[in-house]
Image (cartoon, rainbow, N blue to C red):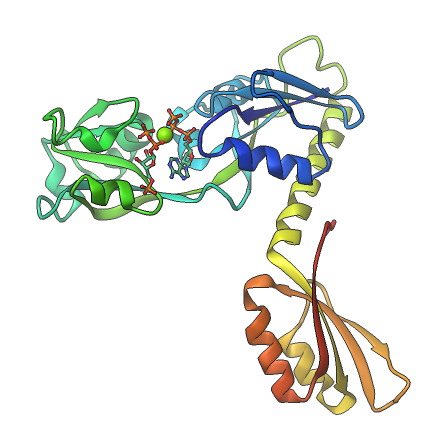
Length: 294
Ligand SMILES: Nc1ncnc2c1ncn2[C@@H]1O[C@H](COP(=O)(O)OP(=O)(O)OP(=O)(O)O)[C@@H](O)[C@H]1O
Ligand SMILES: O=P(O)(O)OC[C@H]1O[C@H](OP(=O)(O)OP(=O)(O)O)[C@H](O)[C@@H]1O
Ligand SMILES: [Mg+2]
Protein backbone atom coordinates (compact mmCIF):
# COMPACT_ATOMS: atom_id res chain seq x y z
CA UNK A 1 0.00 0.00 0.00
CA UNK A 2 1.06 3.55 -0.68
CA UNK A 3 2.06 5.32 2.53
CA UNK A 4 1.23 9.01 2.91
CA UNK A 5 2.18 11.29 5.83
CA UNK A 6 -0.28 14.01 6.90
CA UNK A 7 0.31 16.74 9.55
CA UNK A 8 -1.43 15.64 12.76
CA UNK A 9 -1.79 19.17 14.21
CA UNK A 10 -0.85 22.80 13.60
CA UNK A 11 -1.57 25.26 10.83
CA UNK A 12 -1.60 22.69 7.98
CA UNK A 13 -3.45 19.75 9.51
CA UNK A 14 -7.13 20.56 8.91
CA UNK A 15 -6.59 21.93 5.40
CA UNK A 16 -4.47 18.92 4.39
CA UNK A 17 -7.17 16.50 5.53
CA UNK A 18 -9.88 18.57 3.81
CA UNK A 19 -7.95 18.46 0.55
CA UNK A 20 -7.44 14.69 0.74
CA UNK A 21 -11.14 14.18 1.52
CA UNK A 22 -12.04 16.34 -1.47
CA UNK A 23 -9.75 14.12 -3.55
CA UNK A 24 -11.84 11.11 -2.53
CA UNK A 25 -9.65 9.62 0.21
CA UNK A 26 -10.82 8.53 3.63
CA UNK A 27 -9.52 10.67 6.48
CA UNK A 28 -9.50 10.10 10.22
CA UNK A 29 -12.50 11.28 12.26
CA UNK A 30 -10.80 11.04 15.63
CA UNK A 31 -7.81 13.31 16.33
CA UNK A 32 -6.22 10.52 18.35
CA UNK A 33 -6.00 8.12 15.41
CA UNK A 34 -2.38 7.72 14.27
CA UNK A 35 -2.96 5.62 11.16
CA UNK A 36 -5.89 5.25 8.79
CA UNK A 37 -6.11 2.59 6.12
CA UNK A 38 -8.08 3.49 2.99
CA UNK A 39 -8.42 -0.03 1.55
CA UNK A 40 -10.42 0.98 -1.48
CA UNK A 41 -7.81 3.46 -2.69
CA UNK A 42 -4.82 1.38 -1.55
CA UNK A 43 -3.43 4.14 0.66
CA UNK A 44 -2.33 4.16 4.29
CA UNK A 45 -2.32 7.60 5.95
CA UNK A 46 0.06 8.30 8.85
CA UNK A 47 -0.67 11.35 11.03
CA UNK A 48 2.66 12.78 12.10
CA UNK A 49 4.10 16.00 13.50
CA UNK A 50 4.46 18.48 10.62
CA UNK A 51 8.18 18.84 11.27
CA UNK A 52 8.70 15.06 11.15
CA UNK A 53 6.95 14.42 7.83
CA UNK A 54 10.09 15.23 5.80
CA UNK A 55 12.23 12.91 7.92
CA UNK A 56 10.07 9.85 7.22
CA UNK A 57 9.81 10.65 3.52
CA UNK A 58 13.54 11.46 3.22
CA UNK A 59 14.45 8.12 4.79
CA UNK A 60 12.23 6.18 2.41
CA UNK A 61 9.92 4.91 5.17
CA UNK A 62 6.88 6.78 3.83
CA UNK A 63 6.31 7.36 0.10
CA UNK A 64 4.64 10.79 0.07
CA UNK A 65 3.97 13.53 2.59
CA UNK A 66 2.21 16.83 3.04
CA UNK A 67 4.24 19.46 4.86
CA UNK A 68 5.27 23.12 4.56
CA UNK A 69 7.94 24.06 2.01
CA UNK A 70 9.77 25.84 4.86
CA UNK A 71 9.60 22.76 7.11
CA UNK A 72 10.81 20.52 4.27
CA UNK A 73 13.82 22.74 3.48
CA UNK A 74 14.59 23.16 7.16
CA UNK A 75 14.75 19.39 7.68
CA UNK A 76 17.55 19.12 5.05
CA UNK A 77 16.68 15.47 4.56
CA UNK A 78 18.45 14.77 1.25
CA UNK A 79 18.07 11.17 0.08
CA UNK A 80 16.43 12.29 -3.16
CA UNK A 81 13.34 13.69 -1.41
CA UNK A 82 11.76 16.49 -3.41
CA UNK A 83 8.79 18.82 -3.60
CA UNK A 84 6.43 17.62 -6.32
CA UNK A 85 3.33 19.80 -6.00
CA UNK A 86 2.40 23.11 -4.35
CA UNK A 87 -0.98 22.68 -2.66
CA UNK A 88 -2.17 26.30 -2.50
CA UNK A 89 -2.88 26.53 1.23
CA UNK A 90 -0.80 27.32 4.35
CA UNK A 91 0.82 30.23 2.54
CA UNK A 92 3.29 32.28 4.54
CA UNK A 93 6.55 34.18 4.18
CA UNK A 94 9.65 33.41 6.18
CA UNK A 95 11.26 36.69 7.23
CA UNK A 96 13.80 38.41 9.40
CA UNK A 97 12.36 40.77 12.02
CA UNK A 98 13.59 42.96 14.85
CA UNK A 99 12.38 45.82 17.06
CA UNK A 100 11.47 48.82 14.90
CA UNK A 101 14.40 50.78 13.47
CA UNK A 102 17.04 48.33 14.64
CA UNK A 103 18.27 46.84 11.34
CA UNK A 104 17.70 47.52 7.66
CA UNK A 105 19.49 44.69 5.85
CA UNK A 106 20.50 41.10 6.48
CA UNK A 107 24.12 42.28 6.24
CA UNK A 108 23.57 44.16 9.53
CA UNK A 109 23.33 40.77 11.25
CA UNK A 110 27.00 39.81 10.84
CA UNK A 111 28.29 38.85 14.27
CA UNK A 112 24.77 39.00 15.80
CA UNK A 113 22.38 36.42 17.36
CA UNK A 114 19.21 35.43 15.48
CA UNK A 115 16.52 33.23 17.07
CA UNK A 116 14.37 30.87 15.02
CA UNK A 117 12.62 27.49 14.98
CA UNK A 118 14.00 26.89 11.49
CA UNK A 119 17.75 26.81 12.12
CA UNK A 120 18.61 24.53 9.18
CA UNK A 121 16.88 26.80 6.69
CA UNK A 122 18.26 30.00 8.22
CA UNK A 123 21.88 28.83 8.57
CA UNK A 124 21.89 27.80 4.91
CA UNK A 125 20.35 31.12 3.86
CA UNK A 126 22.97 33.19 5.73
CA UNK A 127 25.71 31.07 4.13
CA UNK A 128 24.17 31.58 0.65
CA UNK A 129 23.90 35.34 1.25
CA UNK A 130 27.41 35.76 2.62
CA UNK A 131 26.36 36.98 6.08
CA UNK A 132 29.18 35.84 8.34
CA UNK A 133 29.42 34.92 12.02
CA UNK A 134 25.71 34.82 12.78
CA UNK A 135 24.84 32.82 15.88
CA UNK A 136 21.56 31.02 15.12
CA UNK A 137 19.70 30.38 18.38
CA UNK A 138 17.16 27.55 18.21
CA UNK A 139 13.77 28.10 19.91
CA UNK A 140 10.73 25.85 19.63
CA UNK A 141 8.14 28.64 19.34
CA UNK A 142 7.02 32.09 20.56
CA UNK A 143 10.12 33.35 18.80
CA UNK A 144 8.81 36.95 18.87
CA UNK A 145 9.70 37.14 22.58
CA UNK A 146 13.37 36.30 21.98
CA UNK A 147 14.67 39.85 21.52
CA UNK A 148 12.72 41.37 24.41
CA UNK A 149 13.99 38.60 26.67
CA UNK A 150 17.56 39.13 25.50
CA UNK A 151 18.38 35.76 23.98
CA UNK A 152 18.79 37.22 20.45
CA UNK A 153 19.21 40.51 18.54
CA UNK A 154 16.76 39.58 15.76
CA UNK A 155 14.47 36.71 14.77
CA UNK A 156 13.50 34.79 11.65
CA UNK A 157 9.96 33.43 11.64
CA UNK A 158 6.82 32.59 9.73
CA UNK A 159 4.77 35.70 8.91
CA UNK A 160 1.21 35.37 7.70
CA UNK A 161 -0.90 38.40 8.66
CA UNK A 162 1.98 40.13 10.49
CA UNK A 163 -0.23 40.60 13.58
CA UNK A 164 2.07 38.67 15.90
CA UNK A 165 5.09 40.78 14.92
CA UNK A 166 3.11 44.00 15.28
CA UNK A 167 1.91 43.04 18.74
CA UNK A 168 5.52 42.44 19.74
CA UNK A 169 6.58 45.90 18.45
CA UNK A 170 8.70 44.39 15.70
CA UNK A 171 9.04 44.91 11.95
CA UNK A 172 10.41 42.80 9.11
CA UNK A 173 13.62 43.86 7.37
CA UNK A 174 16.00 42.57 4.72
CA UNK A 175 15.15 40.27 1.82
CA UNK A 176 12.27 37.80 2.26
CA UNK A 177 13.87 34.41 2.95
CA UNK A 178 11.20 32.14 1.51
CA UNK A 179 7.62 32.09 0.18
CA UNK A 180 6.09 28.98 1.68
CA UNK A 181 2.92 26.95 1.23
CA UNK A 182 1.84 23.40 1.90
CA UNK A 183 3.53 21.02 -0.54
CA UNK A 184 3.42 17.37 -1.48
CA UNK A 185 6.86 15.78 -1.14
CA UNK A 186 8.07 12.40 -2.31
CA UNK A 187 11.10 10.26 -1.59
CA UNK A 188 13.25 8.63 -4.25
CA UNK A 189 10.58 5.99 -4.92
CA UNK A 190 12.45 3.20 -3.15
CA UNK A 191 10.82 2.27 0.09
CA UNK A 192 12.99 0.32 2.46
CA UNK A 193 10.69 -2.36 3.87
CA UNK A 194 9.18 -5.75 3.04
CA UNK A 195 5.82 -4.22 2.27
CA UNK A 196 7.18 -2.39 -0.75
CA UNK A 197 7.01 -5.51 -2.88
CA UNK A 198 5.04 -3.98 -5.71
CA UNK A 199 6.83 -0.85 -6.94
CA UNK A 200 4.62 -0.64 -10.02
CA UNK A 201 1.45 -0.58 -7.91
CA UNK A 202 3.00 2.11 -5.69
CA UNK A 203 3.87 4.22 -8.72
CA UNK A 204 0.33 3.90 -10.04
CA UNK A 205 -1.12 4.93 -6.67
CA UNK A 206 1.32 7.84 -6.50
CA UNK A 207 0.38 9.12 -9.95
CA UNK A 208 -3.29 8.75 -9.08
CA UNK A 209 -2.94 10.73 -5.86
CA UNK A 210 -1.05 13.51 -7.65
CA UNK A 211 -3.69 13.69 -10.39
CA UNK A 212 -6.47 13.81 -7.84
CA UNK A 213 -4.80 16.63 -5.89
CA UNK A 214 -4.18 18.54 -9.13
CA UNK A 215 -7.89 18.08 -9.87
CA UNK A 216 -8.81 19.59 -6.50
CA UNK A 217 -6.48 22.54 -7.15
CA UNK A 218 -8.05 23.23 -10.52
CA UNK A 219 -11.61 22.81 -9.18
CA UNK A 220 -10.76 25.36 -6.46
CA UNK A 221 -9.06 27.85 -8.75
CA UNK A 222 -11.34 27.74 -11.80
CA UNK A 223 -15.03 28.18 -12.59
CA UNK A 224 -16.99 27.18 -15.68
CA UNK A 225 -18.21 30.09 -17.81
CA UNK A 226 -20.97 29.73 -20.44
CA UNK A 227 -22.20 32.46 -22.77
CA UNK A 228 -23.81 33.14 -26.13
CA UNK A 229 -22.07 35.34 -28.67
CA UNK A 230 -22.60 36.42 -32.28
CA UNK A 231 -20.33 34.49 -34.65
CA UNK A 232 -18.47 37.58 -35.83
CA UNK A 233 -17.28 38.22 -32.26
CA UNK A 234 -16.32 34.61 -31.52
CA UNK A 235 -12.63 35.06 -32.15
CA UNK A 236 -12.39 38.10 -29.87
CA UNK A 237 -14.46 36.31 -27.22
CA UNK A 238 -12.29 33.20 -27.17
CA UNK A 239 -9.24 35.44 -26.75
CA UNK A 240 -10.89 36.60 -23.50
CA UNK A 241 -11.74 33.02 -22.44
CA UNK A 242 -9.18 30.69 -24.07
CA UNK A 243 -9.92 27.88 -21.59
CA UNK A 244 -7.37 25.40 -20.26
CA UNK A 245 -6.92 23.66 -23.59
CA UNK A 246 -9.53 25.16 -25.89
CA UNK A 247 -13.13 26.34 -25.34
CA UNK A 248 -16.15 24.27 -26.43
CA UNK A 249 -18.17 25.98 -29.19
CA UNK A 250 -21.72 24.77 -29.88
CA UNK A 251 -24.19 25.93 -32.56
CA UNK A 252 -27.45 27.62 -31.53
CA UNK A 253 -30.86 27.52 -33.27
CA UNK A 254 -30.17 31.05 -34.51
CA UNK A 255 -27.18 30.38 -36.77
CA UNK A 256 -25.76 33.88 -36.27
CA UNK A 257 -25.04 32.94 -32.66
CA UNK A 258 -22.92 30.26 -30.91
CA UNK A 259 -22.67 29.06 -27.32
CA UNK A 260 -19.23 29.01 -25.71
CA UNK A 261 -18.13 27.03 -22.65
CA UNK A 262 -14.74 27.63 -21.07
CA UNK A 263 -12.92 27.26 -17.76
CA UNK A 264 -11.69 30.59 -16.37
CA UNK A 265 -9.74 31.58 -13.23
CA UNK A 266 -12.29 32.11 -10.43
CA UNK A 267 -10.60 35.34 -9.31
CA UNK A 268 -11.16 36.95 -12.72
CA UNK A 269 -14.85 35.99 -13.00
CA UNK A 270 -16.40 39.46 -12.85
CA UNK A 271 -13.73 41.19 -14.92
CA UNK A 272 -14.17 38.59 -17.69
CA UNK A 273 -17.98 38.82 -17.56
CA UNK A 274 -17.71 42.61 -18.00
CA UNK A 275 -15.37 42.24 -20.99
CA UNK A 276 -17.62 39.62 -22.61
CA UNK A 277 -20.75 41.69 -22.03
CA UNK A 278 -19.10 44.74 -23.61
CA UNK A 279 -18.26 42.57 -26.61
CA UNK A 280 -21.92 41.61 -26.97
CA UNK A 281 -22.03 38.28 -25.16
CA UNK A 282 -25.32 37.51 -23.42
CA UNK A 283 -26.69 34.81 -21.06
CA UNK A 284 -23.31 34.67 -19.31
CA UNK A 285 -23.49 31.96 -16.67
CA UNK A 286 -20.87 30.94 -14.14
CA UNK A 287 -20.88 27.63 -12.28
CA UNK A 288 -18.47 26.15 -9.78
CA UNK A 289 -16.54 23.02 -10.65
CA UNK A 290 -17.21 20.26 -8.17
CA UNK A 291 -14.35 18.00 -9.24
CA UNK A 292 -12.16 17.55 -12.28
CA UNK A 293 -9.30 15.62 -13.81
CA UNK A 294 -7.04 17.67 -16.09
N1 LIG B 1 -0.01 31.67 10.64
C1 LIG B 1 0.80 30.63 10.60
N2 LIG B 1 1.47 30.24 11.68
C2 LIG B 1 2.31 29.20 11.65
N3 LIG B 1 2.56 28.47 10.58
C3 LIG B 1 1.92 28.80 9.47
C4 LIG B 1 1.01 29.89 9.40
N4 LIG B 1 0.54 29.95 8.16
C5 LIG B 1 1.13 28.96 7.49
N5 LIG B 1 1.96 28.27 8.26
C6 LIG B 1 2.78 27.12 7.87
O1 LIG B 1 2.48 26.00 8.70
C7 LIG B 1 3.67 25.26 8.97
C8 LIG B 1 3.93 25.24 10.45
O2 LIG B 1 3.01 24.41 11.00
P1 LIG B 1 2.75 24.26 12.55
O3 LIG B 1 1.79 25.30 12.98
O4 LIG B 1 2.31 22.88 12.72
O5 LIG B 1 4.20 24.45 13.12
P2 LIG B 1 4.59 25.01 14.50
O6 LIG B 1 4.10 26.39 14.62
O7 LIG B 1 6.06 24.80 14.62
O8 LIG B 1 3.81 24.01 15.42
P3 LIG B 1 3.29 24.30 16.88
O9 LIG B 1 2.94 25.76 16.95
O10 LIG B 1 2.10 23.38 16.98
O11 LIG B 1 4.40 23.91 17.76
C9 LIG B 1 4.77 25.94 8.19
O12 LIG B 1 4.89 25.33 6.94
C10 LIG B 1 4.26 27.35 8.06
O13 LIG B 1 4.79 28.03 6.94
O1 LIG C 1 1.76 36.72 10.92
P1 LIG C 1 0.75 36.05 11.81
O2 LIG C 1 -0.58 35.88 11.16
O3 LIG C 1 0.65 36.73 13.14
O4 LIG C 1 1.22 34.52 12.04
C1 LIG C 1 2.55 34.17 12.31
C2 LIG C 1 2.72 33.63 13.70
O5 LIG C 1 2.00 32.41 13.85
C3 LIG C 1 2.90 31.35 14.20
O6 LIG C 1 2.96 31.17 15.56
P2 LIG C 1 2.11 30.06 16.35
O7 LIG C 1 0.78 30.57 16.71
O8 LIG C 1 2.14 28.77 15.59
O9 LIG C 1 2.95 29.94 17.68
P3 LIG C 1 4.46 29.43 17.84
O10 LIG C 1 5.35 30.58 17.47
O11 LIG C 1 4.57 29.11 19.28
O12 LIG C 1 4.64 28.25 16.94
C4 LIG C 1 4.24 31.85 13.71
O13 LIG C 1 5.31 31.25 14.40
C5 LIG C 1 4.17 33.33 13.97
O14 LIG C 1 4.46 33.61 15.30
MG1 LIG D 1 3.25 27.38 15.56
